[in-house]
Length: 139
Image (cartoon, rainbow, N blue to C red; front, side, top):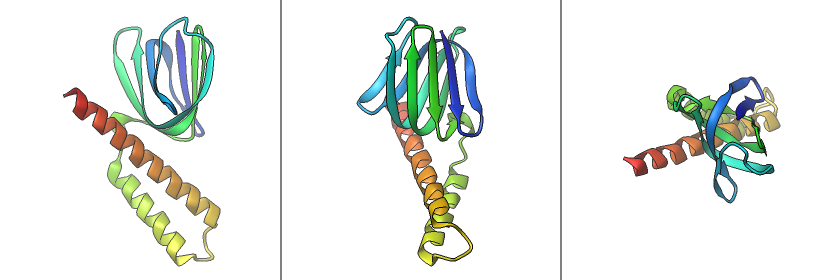
């Protein structure tokens, strides 16, 4: 089956896969070829993709939606990064900057924009923590 993971900014992954595991609101979803059609929301966490060569890729997402058709999985997310490329320190700095901007309530930045940046940073950190717990649990 084909899988597309698309963020608001770019296509994060597109390819043939044998399995997708995603963080659904009611728990982890395992999706294999010919899965029944499904549309549901996703929470912040890790999406694991096993490609048709048995290579596993992990992406940290900040939530979104997933649409499953028998031969196509489409994941739409606000933010997504490969777990291996995640820059935790940069996200922590962005979170601290947004918190400071909200405390100072300066005129130079739109409050809604700052709140969205803070929410984005928090979701990324939550996704990282969930992924770390899973990795530690496996080992």
